Length: 160
Image 1 (spheres, rainbow, N blue to C red):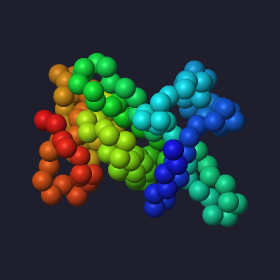
Image 2 (spheres, rainbow, N blue to C red):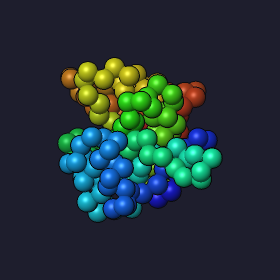
Image 3 (cartoon, one colour):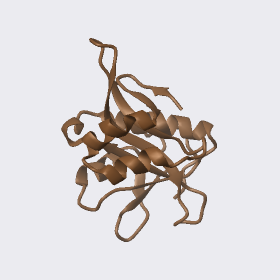
């Protein structure tokens, strides 16, 4: 799956990306998990890249993906987004999530759950701005909320 947004290019993860992912995440196991597992087309996993107009390349700045969310038992898809620390607070996470949300509806998803680390206030703030609401007592899972007139509403059939 390839997605182009205003500033980003989201593309599949390939074996050749291993070294760059290890350098970015500083975690061999995380990099290998993104590369080593096959996944159905309905659940895409992408690298978030920032095209460099000078050399024509695209530098990896994060990951975004969808997985099956069995924990809630309601067919929801689980959203994962991670942006490298040095690229945070520049709107890249928001732009990547909005691009993927638009794609997910066309893939037949209508319920999206996102998890964040409890200590990560910025991640929670981003998801809340995009219309997600807390769904668990620890507020680790968020689900798209109904929001009439929400400027970030991607046309989903929101669940309460």
